[in-house]
Image (cartoon, rainbow, N blue to C red; front, side, top):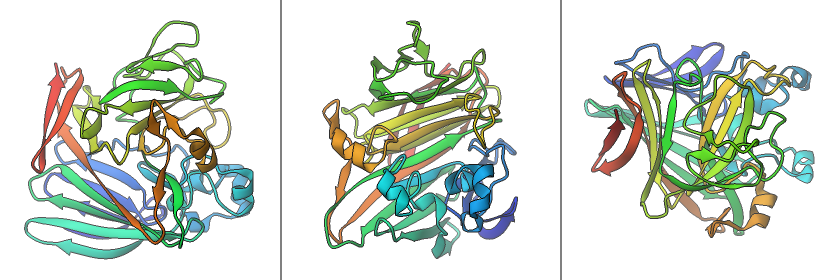
Length: 366
């Protein structure tokens, strides 16, 4: 049961460990960059880019050719998009705002730490001057539990109501992410593909309704969204509406070969959407260079990474709002949990997840 400050591949991190699971948090951008179930040592389900990342504060204009922006220079694993999800407007770019906002590229600082016989917790956060917000995240891990509880608080520093979008950009990668092996499940109902051209390696029709998990193939054949096709290159995005009949929403990822499942569970009212982003060796530009495999399972209060202005203009999709409001000098709190669990090699996915007190009942498919 410990919390330690460390350096990992040149980055400043905090490491949290109990007897079941370890979690790595980055100072630069606040990313959750490492998750290790002690029963499955050495397997980190989060995405580690193929390029060497740097502290966002170390980024210089000369790094543009190498990284194509500060965000990609620093990105790892689960990152936070706050204020806006997606590309900023031309005016916002000129004013200094980058893709997915400030949170994943500013320095985060520790506010409070606690280590007791029962558990550990760490509170860290950042100030976002461009969008006039304060953000704080508390991570709690109890003894004898592989459930990580997270509470986040957003404070509006402006003396006016502001529209905002927010996305928990959970990104998974190898070795946990394997084409044709890793299986994804979620409490989704309807879905819709990206409303326009997302890439030149799309496997799904643009701007089209569907029902999870069968996406509308660009050539008419349904696309199985539960896994990644090992026979093709692809780069796609779709949004999924989480089941409005359920108080909680969830997604899971299972690698039967490695014997590991991870899942996230959250209050559906906070994040009614989940974006499914697949990068399957499809992007030839720097720093991807056609060599990256990653999948984003991005639960959010907005369906698409299209920036704040377009999200507000969209208004609603499937009768559900595509952005939210933060009152003048007001605050918002959201909570979610991360679950790690060993599984049998015969596991074929997850049929359901239900909170039961401070634990969860998980229905595995075999």
